[in-house]
Length: 459
Ligand code: SAH
Ligand code: SF4
Ligand code: F3S
Image (cartoon, rainbow, N blue to C red; front, side, top):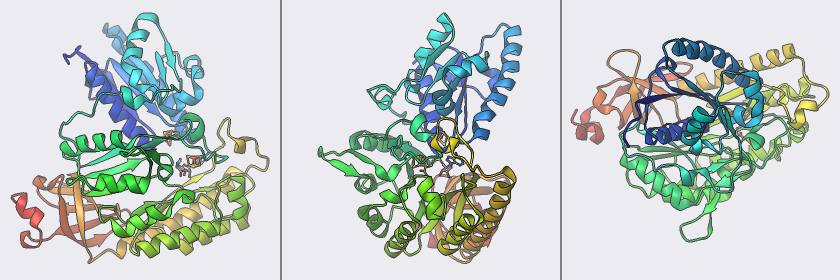
């Protein structure tokens, strides 16, 4: 496609699915003749791909729009027009309200309509402000250009499932992303093969509720996530598979068994539990008890004893007492996590929990979060320390901060720094862990004789 001379700049907030969506939006804009800009100052179109999950995330967008307003008027003085688009989950949740609150915005586009971004920009340029937050019948993936086969990072995201039918009472996702939808296997495999051709050797398969995947299989029957992953493992140059985020209720037997059978599936699982008390889990509508969660963890560990677990936890959900919170702490102590994300409960508009009485005071939430994060940090540090002296395959992804240093990931998703030549970027290399910090590891590259991959990289 010939260029229009125009440039786009996309800034991404929120979860991995937004990272994936931004990549697809960039590709769609490339196909529409836009090149990527290095900064908003040099962009004719700025897209904010937004997150609505907590109040802070949503509010960030308005301060960002304040900064963009200045850039837009500075460019205007030079005779250059700047279109500003708000995409993603805030766009979906707030819709027209954004246009009222932020006059700088030209375009509001929901997560199910971003394949129309190019057209919408054109429309807004001619007719003025535009909004599209529909949930169309036909899926957007059918309208996006094929993924370009150009060299990219060795690790890539691939959305296979979107939306959520679980309706946890605190969560906006079922409203911003709509009902659960699984992409057909054929479409997923075709995209994976194009990514593989572009040099990707690690795929992280994404869905808000990825293990509820139930897509149309290559044989016309409905396939589970386990069956889809087995199919992706057949692609020879795909060496590592990961998936996120899973719901404990949907950890099916075939998926758990896969962890023991398919060595391309990495021994790492993100499995949010949110709260340790059954009373709070019930009020959250999580559809699982504490005992069901620990039983699921036990089954996964039987299938894959060395699996590293990570989780999401909310503190201060309405009605949470000190005793409830202690059960969250106890569950963390019982399971032991290699990594975790923890948050203060944030009341979200339109969710059932927003109007629950007995909201927990902010200072109590802060105190609980502080205690929980200290425990989680200690567990993460202990897990990292237990890796010192062990040998792992590391996928090197990019240069580190120090010259001559590369950064990669272990099978357990820990960041690893090692002194290594650039030629190893994009390669799976055997290393020995020489040091551990709270958030990352240090490693030595093993000798060429120990590492066939190293020899073939010509090092
Ligand atoms: N689909 C995923 C994650 C959704 S959002 C899942 O089901 O686990 C990511 C995390 O944000 C959630 O796991 C939860 O811990 C947190 N979260 C969601 N809504 C929240 C809210 N209202 N307040 C605080 N944290 C929230
Ligand atoms: Fe939100 Fe619950 Fe669905 Fe996760 S499972 S996206 S927390 S409603
Ligand atoms: Fe945020 Fe939407 Fe993801 S609300 S967490 S960007 S699905």
